Amino acid sequence: MSSSEAAANPEGDKACEIEDEEEKEVEQLEAEVKDLAEKVIELRRTMKLVFRDKLEALLLAKRPTLPEDKPSSSVEGSKVTQGTGTSLATAREEQEVDQETAAQIALLKRKIAANVAAMPATTERMKLCVEKIDRLDQYKVNIDYVFTKKMDSDR
Picture (cartoon, rainbow, N blue to C red):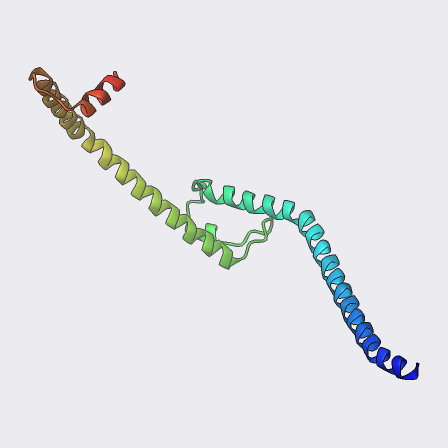
């Protein structure tokens, strides 16, 4: 019996060691799962706020900014007002942003004026193209069915 017990002990010790290792792995995995569950719960709480803030920031960024009415002298615009608490540096940054915005608005106005000036020439070219198309319709030629099909569907 003692020889059989000695032979059983090494195998039993190995089995116990394997079970202990498996238990440790299971405990480690359970701890990781708990950590992940806590992270998921925390993200569910905070993601609503983060999503709302990001969406609000995107919408504010897409909103066009219009220049505000500024005082007539540039010295008054750069002075620090006691009520707002803005510093001289932020006032300068605001002036630079306002100047950039004013430059962009001026560029947009010039482009619009150029487009409006070019409109009569564009409409004249459109009229000429329509007349040419009407003249082509007078000719009795075999037109590919693809083109006639499009014309029929447009009417």
